[in-house]
Length: 279
Ligand SMILES: [Fe+2]
Ligand SMILES: [Fe+2]
Image (cartoon, rainbow, N blue to C red; front, side, top):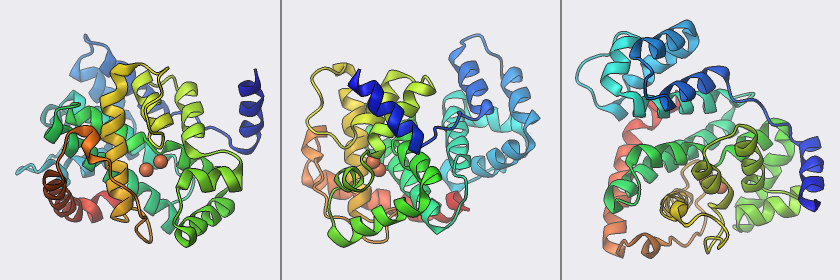
C-alpha cells in the first residue's frame, strides 16, 4: 500500500513514456517461434527512419562484416533474429531521449559500454549468453533516461554532485530527488511488461547482496551486468570523471589477472566502435 502511494507521487514528477511501437511489435514477433523473416522485414521496412538507422548499425565495425549490408532482408539474414532484437531495443532506447545533447550522449555511451562489457563478461564466464547480456546492459540504466527527460536541470545537478563528492549514484539521487534510477527503472519495466529477468537487472544492479526474495535463476545475469557497470564507472565510460568503484570480479569467478585482460580487450573494442555507435 505504502509502495503504491510512493509510486503515485513519483509518477507525478517523472512521466514514463511508452515503449516505441516498433519495439513492441518486433519483440512480440521475435517471441513468436512461427514468425517469418518476411513479417519482421515488413514491420521494419515500414518505418523508414528506423530502417536507415538499423542498416547503419548493422554495418558498424561492431558486427565486423566484410560485406556491406545493403537492405533490410540482407541485414536480417546476416545479423539473425537474436541480435536483431538487441538492435531494435538499442535503437528504440536511444530514441527515448527527448533531446540528445552532451549529457544524453554520455548516458547513451555508458549504456553501450555496459552492453559490450556485459557481453564480453558473459563470453568469458558462461554465466549468460552474450546476446542476453547485451540487451540487459543496454537497458540497465533506462531509469536515468526517463528521469532526465522529466527533470533535466535537476538531474544534471545530481551528476555534478556525483563528480564532486565521488559517492554512489543511487545515494545522491535518493538525497536530491527522493528516488533513484533503479526504482524508476523498475516502474518502467513493469509498465512495459518487460521480461522479469530484465526487471531484476534494472532494479538491482546497484544492490548487493542479491535480495533473497528474488528468483535465484536471475542471479548470474544480475551479477554480470552489475560487474560490467562497475567496470564502466571506474573507466569513466559515459562519465566526465571516473568514479572510485570496487569491481566485484570474484562474484563472477574471475581472477584479478583475467579481469585485467578482459578490461584491456573491452577498452580496445569500445574505442574502435565508440564513435560510430554514438553518431
Ligand atoms: Fe545504474
Ligand atoms: Fe550504469
